[in-house]
Image (tube, rainbow, N blue to C red; front, side, top):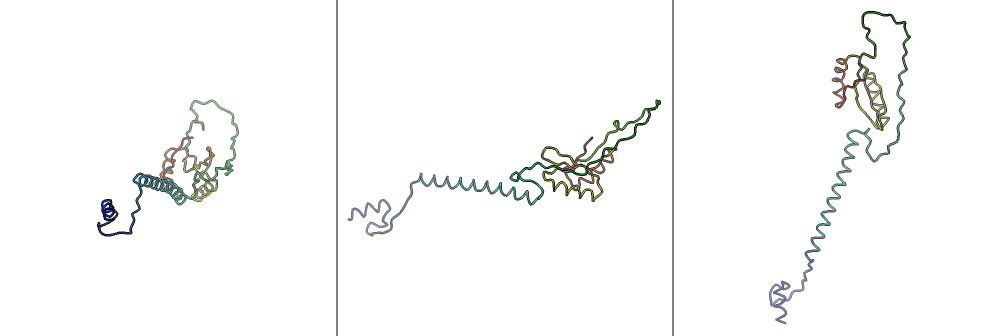
Length: 178
C-alpha cells in the first residue's frame, strides 16, 4: 500500500505519503468551464439589452404620456376640429386705374407649426391649451400625425415675435410660409 500512497501524493490526492485522506476532488475539464462561462456571459448580455429597451419605453412614457410607443396599436384617427367656414367676398366691378392694386394672393402669409401628435386626444388637449392662451389654432392630418399650427400672419415680423414666445414652451416649433 505504500506505493499506492506515494502515487496518490504525486497526483495531489493525498497531502502526506503516510496519511490516508477520504476527501475526493471533483474537477471539470477546462473546455466545459470555458463553454459554461461563454454561455453565462451571453445570457447576461441578452438580459441587459432587453432591460435597456424596456427602460427606454418606460422613460418615454414618463417623459410624455401622450407619446405613442411602437407597441401600441396604430389606429387611423379621424379628426374633425372646428372647420373654418369658407369666406367668399362679393365680386365688385373692376375699374381701370394707374396705381397697382395689391391682391390677397400677392401677400405672403405665415403660420407657426407648434407640435404633432399621433393620438387625437393629445392633439385636442394641446389645441385647447393654446386657445385658452389666446392663440388661434388650426390642425391638419399628415400621414399618421395630427399637426397643430398657430395663427395666420400677414406680417413676417409679427409671426417671428409670436414664434419667440412659443419657443419657450415648444422648443422645436418653426415658422411656415403658406
